[in-house]
Image (cartoon, rainbow, N blue to C red; front, side):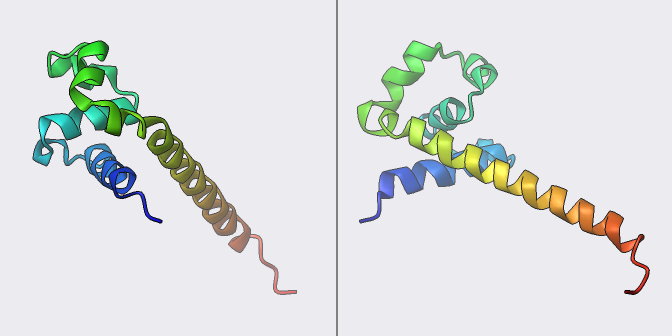
Length: 98
């Protein structure tokens, strides 16, 4: 069974992370700020952490930790993939044809 609310939170948080913050609703912006651990975004919107939690509501707040874990895991995988690619590039220069 797909958790459509979690999928929506992930979609909106990725959009915010990737610079598309302005197209989100206030609730989506607040959720993304919580998922991405961006208290400065909350401050710019004149929200305290408590006000953001209240505005987001219990259904979405219950999924914020899971969304944060998913995005953190994605970032780790991307960093690993980048490290592998960099190692491949370095090793290409060392290839002596065996």
